[in-house]
Image (cartoon, rainbow, N blue to C red; front, side):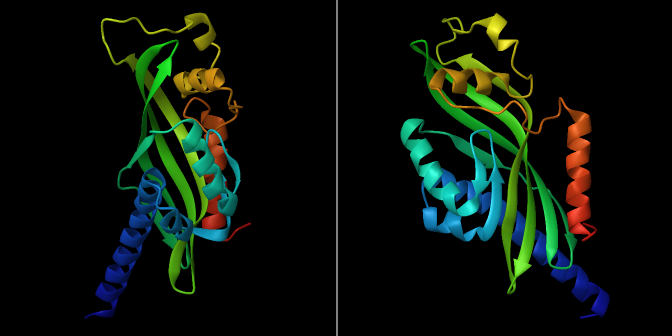
Length: 206
């Protein structure tokens, strides 16, 4: 095999491994394969989601407790944009979070459109996640029975950010402390600053 072609094949294999890593972590989380999920993170990984901000080790046990209180959430991950520089990489993947809940006695389905962003690092020949962030785009909610109205205080809903307002409304009702400063498309300047930081890390400029 020609050297240039060999490099392209190796780069393609790295991209596929990284994409598989991202989807495997979310699948393991949804199906309760905790050992598989833990293997996806480096020991010093940092995780930030709508309900968690901390290290990757504690994230596993925290997720177990969350699913005991609010079970049923599922995650879809679609092929993402991978950038590689040596043993460092970043990946941003379109995603969808889905769940069914009971709100004011009414069954509702809600969906959150988002992107998952991670720093990935290869250590001892193995790619694992070093960070995990969620970038929110928008969310929707509807009643399972379409003949029933959505039990929402619309004035209160309007006080939440448009990128995850239904999620914030529901989590507030559940008693969760949801941050108002999460990454989202409604704050393009903060998002640009975040991506600039990711690029500096990737190219080892920090």
